[in-house]
Structure formats: C-alpha cells, structure tokens
Image 1: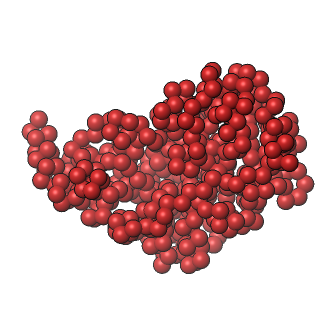
Image 2: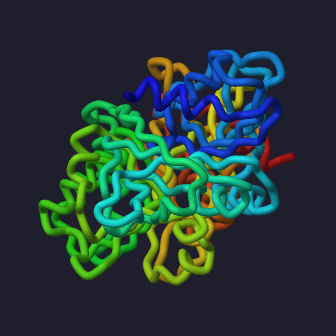
Image 3: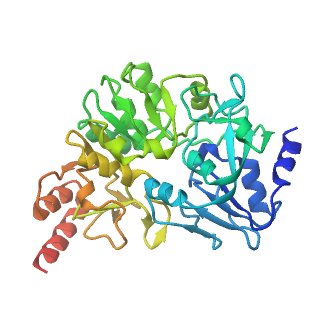
Length: 404
C-alpha cells in the first residue's frame, strides 16, 4: 500500500516545479529518495534538511536543484544561504511555490491532523504554495498542542507509513559532562531554556533535574527533556515550546498524545518579540571555535562550510538582550587529540555569532563570563579556559594583536 501511495505521490509533478518540504523529522523520506534518485522529473526543492538527522543527497539528477537551510557538502546543485532560522523564515515568506508537501499524523477526529513532531517552516510554506499535498504517516505521533492541517485544504492526501529520522548522539562522556556542569551553574529555577542537539545538551538537561519551574523555549527538543519531566523540573503550567522534536523512536512514542508540549512554526518559536519577552531566557549553543574577541564560528571547519547558523543567532540575540537572560556558548577546548585549540586568536571565517550576542563561553576547563568586560579582560578569561597546552601561544598571539 505504501509503495503504491508513494508512486501516486510522485506521479503528479511537472518538470521545473518549485516544491517546498521541511526537513528534520518532518521530511517525507520516500519523496526525498525519489527526488535524489531521478524517479521524479527535475524539480527545484526548497527545504530545511539537517545534516546528521536527514540523509542528505550525494547527487541530484540533471536540472534538479536544492535550496536548503543547511549546506549540503559536495552537492553542486544546491545552495545554502547564510541565514538564521528567523532570516530563512523571512526569505521563505517572500517566495512562491507550486507545491508544499506536509507530513501529518492520522487525525484524532474529523479531518484536522497534527503536524506531530515537526512544524518548522511548514506553516509559512503552506501559505506561499499554490497547492498542498498531505502525507498521513502513522509513525508521526499525534501531539495535541502541535500545529495542524485541515486535510480539506489539501489538494490530495496520501497514506504513507515510514519511520521518522532518529538522532542518537550517544551517552555523554566525561568532557561533555564537565562542560554541562559549568553551564548548569548559570541556570536557576524558573529559567526559560533553549538548547540544541548533542551530548553536551543531553548532559546539561540531565544535570538540571534538581531545578524547578524550568520552561522549555527552544528550537529543537530531544530525548533528554524526559529526564526533566520525570524529575518534576519543568513548570507544569507552562506550554513548553519548540518547532521540532528530534531524537529516538522512543521519544516520538513518548510524545504521542502528550499535552503541554507545543510544536509550532518558526514564525512563533523564533519570533524575536516573543523570545525577548521570555523573562529569563538562557540560550545554550555549541560552536566549532571561539576567538579571543568572544565571537563564535558555528559553520566552518577550516575552509569548509559544514553547518549553518540555524536558530542559534535568533536565541542568542534575544537572550543577550533579556535583562534576566544569558547567552552561553559551550564547546570542547581542543580537538584532534589536543593538537588543535578551539579557542583561537582570531576567526579566519565570518562570525556566526558576534561578540555582543555572547555573554558566557564554557569549555571543560571552566567558564568565561564576558559580561561588562573590555577586550583585554575578555581575552584573559577566554585564554584561562583554553586547553592548558595552548594557553601560552594564545597569550602571545593576543599580546601581538594588542600591540598592533
């Protein structure tokens, strides 16, 4: 049945059609496979496929194109604009599409279906598209407080059962737990919390089980939120909010029919006014490197662009402007068995997060609270949390820059 429904889904596209479909756990994987394999006519797909969550295409048929919120390395027929999620949302709102593909859970009653674990850019994509195709997937959990689609608004409805993408970072190691412990010191009862994906965010949430009244105000939420829920660390009267849930199949099952977790479009979750009014927003994001001025690179590994700003820029700006908020960047102090420092004298690539949007930088060696400090003091504190073997070279580099 699913195979015939997939064939029916991909049979109605015209060459050159502009198609929008969100990525992450909202991607319709059989459609994505057909797009990459050439089973569809040449299309221009716009999406938000996430490296490490979605299987990114290694190649595309001639004349097919992919515009994505994240870079797709090695794929010439793709482009990724250097925009935050808020910026990508604004750009999408200026576009028009022929078709928007939306994945939903089976309706709980009537014809109104929950978008389940992923809303992201789907609401704006639907408003900017000539037609909507709805894919009803039993693997999508019905989330009562998620965004919805009235199936009567869809030109066609397809029943296609396929598993949701999973993200399994593995258990946090000692380094991740150390970084998380330093970050946790800045998070008090009642904080509104944004975290990303990975071992450090998982370790952080598990370190916060003794807090009370925490409010999730995030772009992504994953498995580790269950530890907070089970420990009664979450505010029971708060509608915990994100645009997507990404994790294990067990997490998706846990979300099924669960109230209190809103999964809404980025027009809501990344709205700057809403974020600024969070009253105590703590934004916790990772980085590939931080320089001695306190600015962060989230996108480039050497000269290769491997990721995107994502929602980090939206949340870090709001948290840094919140009188009770704080913007934190956490990262390991080095890589390649200690041969390369991730605290560097000066970024050689464009900054993903400017220095005025970062309040605190954390490594496994401690935290550098940069608030209210001048350049010299900021550099001193950042050198103090670098890997010990790299501190003398960083101090010498800063001295040379200061003289210049």
